[in-house]
Length: 134
Image 1 (cartoon, helix red, strand yellow):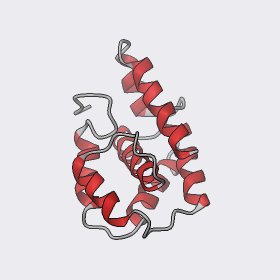
Image 2 (cartoon, rainbow, N blue to C red):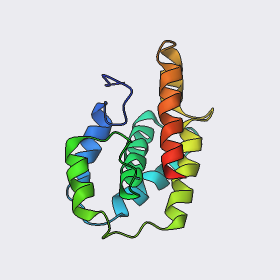
Image 3 (tube, helix red, strand yellow):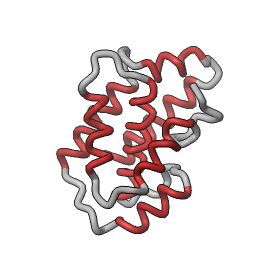
Image 4 (cartoon, one colour):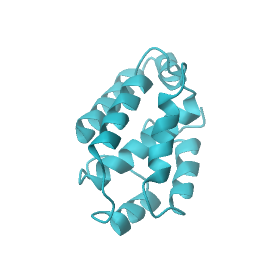
């Protein structure tokens, strides 16, 4: 899985995605990343990891700094917070995507389920993220 922890940015895929975020000055990358998850019957683990990272960024943009993000993403949030308008529709789509990632048709969830000792803590992190977006 290329991860060293269950944090939203503690995997190679999310960190690579965050580098792409640095090139952006709008919400288009977040919107497309979240949308990609919603268009899959069985959600690819990499796509899910990127969507979780995007959702963590959204939580920060909303002002919820309790959700962990990487340093470069935090700098991006600080640069654009209050300058980018987060629509209710984007938040609804984000919550729908998170539900799908935590659902039965998600490779990321399946991978975490295989890690029996870590799975409950991963679920808790996802629920915290969901609460931060609600």
